[in-house]
Length: 113
Length: 114
Image (cartoon, rainbow over all chains, first blue to last red; front, side, top):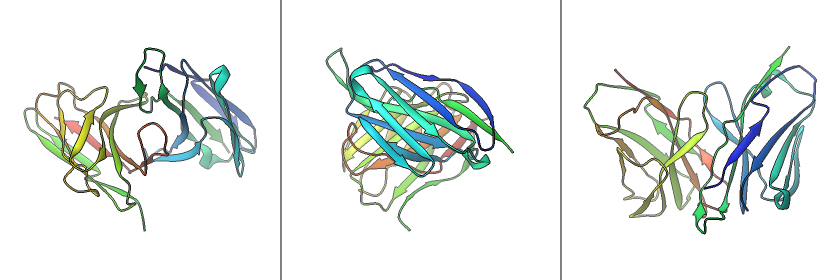
């Protein structure tokens, strides 16, 4: 199946800072989603972005499918942005089969006031 | 309000017991999924169902069973055959296929085996 690597694994920032989270994946994808998991465990879908760029308020995401990576940008961080950010691609892999969403281990973000 | 509900929020089980986790959605989604999350890890797919009365094994189906008798409901049974069932269980749904559509998640059930 698809291999997913997220970086950095942990990130501590002051309120107001900007950050870039990276997701590398090993195979072609036709689906990629970014999720935020809050401290209570709820997963919130941020972006469905198999390719291109999208923006939603202070957050934006870019996926370059040909180079097999996706980036999540968070600007002007707030304490409520704290939590774990997961990248989850899905698609056809080089072994000849298809795969569902494969989650990376996530980036644990802490925003300090 | 449209959404996905899971119950119970917390569940304690004695070794050797089967337990069933509930997942209901009123989003009119065709596809539903069950994931398991262990501490510090991402989610792993247990089972998924793309239509009523049909379901497929995911990456870690051993020791689990599911049913899909209604479009709105996709219960997961954790059997005594699951060797390490303590985990956070998340249910999700999507309007389309496993590969191409946005998945929406419920609040999860934390299962602890005593």
